[in-house]
Image (cartoon, rainbow, N blue to C red; front, side, top):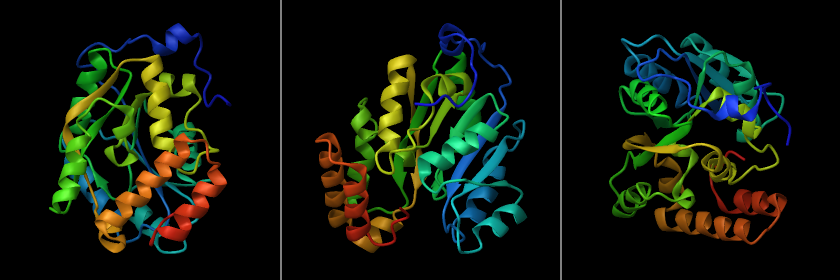
Length: 256
């Protein structure tokens, strides 16, 4: 696995070295592919949610959108990067390589962190945590979605999803080699497992609110069943090629 950054010795990369209250610089990295319907509202929300804080760098890393995503993101004030490769892991790594912040915050285009999230992350880093995420909430009140969101408060990697966002110290991210670009599915859980093996991981008590649009289009129980099947097959060692084929065949409005 290639290294994204030159971080120096492992002890330097992993040791908590930011005192509580330190003014860390943040880079928010958002991977996109045909997100014209979502990106403007998210960027406007991020400006509001970070008001009063040192302005974070906002990088939209596009995977070759054929709609107006790139134009709209630029008009909304984000720095837009064209990823050399499509795929969430590749796009997030490319954003991390270009980012200037000491803290990397990975966020989906249809997910909204709680107001004041930068201060909460800064506090957690000051307490010695190297990475972490939030719990999850959906923007729909279906009982099963509320139950699924409740499960994200449990301390298991199996209930860590990219929709919960992910924050990580830049040195730690470089030390573990970033996201695995050979994974087009399950890249979010895989990196959390490696992060937890290297540094304390903090599950913050508030929630990122994410869109239920894919569940509503595919059917709540049907989509959850598909996701469960993909997870089981991944654990059994089924190839990424087969998993992606299954995803594309079964999921409507998928972005793979």
